[in-house]
Length: 603
Image 1 (spheres, helix red, strand yellow):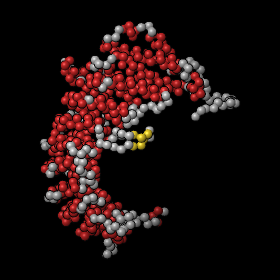
Image 2 (tube, one colour):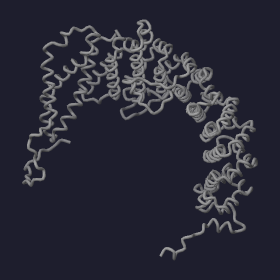
Image 3 (tube, one colour):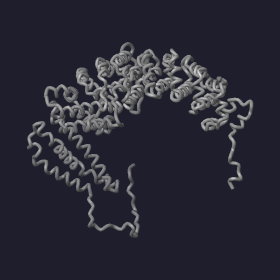
């Protein structure tokens, strides 16, 4: 029986604590020391909270272990010490947060010369962060007395743990009044301006990257907390500083004035993209803009747009001539002139600006012909789907806003001014003709046995968006689109949809692959042609009044046989169930026969 066995085992930690000369290192060698600490073992906590033990624990996480130690166990004790100090035990928190001597030992870690050991830096950041959350007033008061604290943190910003520490100061301080005091303190120290200064070509890449990520996180955290704490009388000073026109202008100056490097441009653009983000209740698909438009719960601060607008020419020039990159080997061959991350981020910014639908920015983009340049890149880099997606989003924004404006605007002059981008897209950029030319070129390549171009999927979605938005009334706003282009566009889309229809329905009702090969193709072309012409009739019939066609052109008798062929095809492909047919009993025993010959298949 189980009570015959001694299951009430005593922890070895307790046995060690009974020794008079037990050392901290001996206890840390025990695997269950952390478990005993979190269980608030009284004897263990009394031992750990002794002054010399606490000092030894803090020293372990702030000083490099000897280099001659085995690498496998070199950071064992610092790691265990960090886990003990951050175990969220009130007795340890009170001792560490209330003893200025211990806090000074911890703070002295920042006086080390860069680069900091990343593992020790993470131990330091985790310990300070825990104290900020648990002993907020004491620790904030201690840090505010240290005049060099902000400077030292920024000095070591190339270590990601310092970035985490700054974010904890912003997000983990409670109550709200104390948090506002911390934000004002950081703002008075010009933390935002100093982080922006670090995004400069003269700084190393890690410092630029972490400074950029810190600014992006500050923007998101500040906006989230402003939404959650709407009763705060004072605005967030850090967010106000970030959204100011002066801050945006300084960031752009660092990016484009003087030496231009891809790393600086990318990191700076990431901050701008975050500033242009909108508050959303949930994650929404951007491509829904084709049918629903953009429901925005947050309007981008006009100061951000005013700061960006004079620099649009620099982003246009970036798309034309980015920082030089060496040729790269890809799966489809050598790419002599890669698109590059800088140009990709430039296209992302253009897409974000188009979503704001700012008239002055739209006019400047039209003057620079930036959308035309983006389309050039779209068709040049046929295998870069990241770029294709951004161009698709840009076109989606233009079409979506045009539909909304077309519904609300009655003044013709006002309509013309507000729809300058959509007119530019179709007239100057010749979007429809480019779609048709690319489609024709792709068909020619595939007919010669070549590979389908990598941008055809996005091109199809763009073409579909154009047709859908035409049906919603955008066509009346674009007098430059010739009806024959819509005719050919409808033809290609109808052909594509017919192909998918044929493949899916044919495989559903046929059980023999060989039968597919032998019998599917002979009458396929005639049916396909009939369906295509029928599809054209249906898609263009809605545009008769719009484009001035005569009814005779659409309602001639030549269309009637095609419609009949289409209906016949549907009846052939879609087999309806007949309840009167006798059902075969699948469980009935039947004689099984085997074919004597097997037709070989080509794999």
